[in-house]
Length: 304
Length: 275
Image (cartoon, rainbow over all chains, first blue to last red; front, side, top):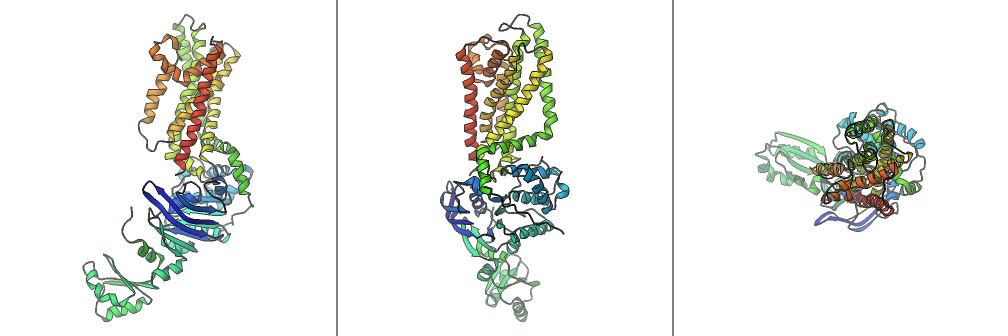
């Protein structure tokens, strides 16, 4: 569906996307992960032909988005990062106007809009102006809008940012159903649980480059351990205790508030810590997650 | 939770894209008209109120004082085509500034459409088509209101509506092209209003012939779509004697500004939307 080779985009001296290559198969759910400014959104824009690449090649459904922008975009559903709904139009009219941009006739759009409003659980809000809807409703409406042309590929740029947990779970459910129907999903996110829920395969980007690629499970196996033991000795003692812990785990990471010990068996480590009389204030064992992988690959320092 | 599966009609996406390539502007016009529908009554009130106020104040009020003929006709007959054109050009100037800027900056109409098969040029063309509809409607209302005032000596004065649409476009498309380049709101549009639109309204031959002004001020008229449009509308309405070549110049200026402005708008829209 999508093939990128050596894809590069620069703005003056700034390299937003740096020799990136990936391919997305039909029916797959593909994720682009990375901190802010990693180049995810630029990559998404290039897929739609709304950003011109500096070098490299990119084909979408066998077409070059720069040459055949309208043809490529006719097959795409786009859910942009920032809402671009028309606040003054009613929810239903937002779908219809948008559908007209695809050249779809009103006879098709009226029933389609009704169907999508129901899919997005917004039927009751069909006649409301968008400005009266909540953030979660607007996001669902944006997704419904992205489906108006029955796209073969749905591009979602941080679809659940700013939503409460209930709204996120509803959205995940909707996206999962679409995937079941064979729609190819390409999404960017910096929520690792979202990536684990939705993505078959993903790439982690940092500073415009791909730093890892694989399924969530593979990445966890490759870049983290099965479990993580989190222990707190108090912010004063964490660093002090670290040398005594180093031999216990595959990897030890000292954070200001706690120490993370990566290992296959977290409970065994806690037992050993107890035997050595180190007595942490609190402790817990959890499964290793994509978030651990992400932080390992892209660092813990704040990205603005 | 019941949730219907989204239906699939096996759309021919390529064919759809072909249609948008050919007449995407129609679809954007569709949006523009739909978006303006909630403001229809405001539009109508303005379209009715403007000619009433202008024709009453300038045509009847001021006209009662101006007893001698101007350009060979009564002051009302002289000023009415000017007021029609001025109203449409000023309306067009309004639409070419904030609404376009806002479409990029706040309302994001253009950003939304850029994720569809629409190209930036389709959007600029669609906005222009929307302007034709609005100016045509407003001009027609102006003309109708002028009838009971006795503002139009001939039926050919109705041509003034078409001329007004063209003069409005000559103002609209260059401003639209400019507004698409602005990233931040500033004083630019105040300058447009105070330094371009207002002087044009006062000094571009709407209220008195351009020739009655000192030569060093006449350039304001020559440069402005308002004067060229007004002169053409006067030719149509009461047969203002203007040589054929000058009629051609008026037309060329108006068409040139419209087409040139639109060509530049295609570029500025594209530069803004494709990064």
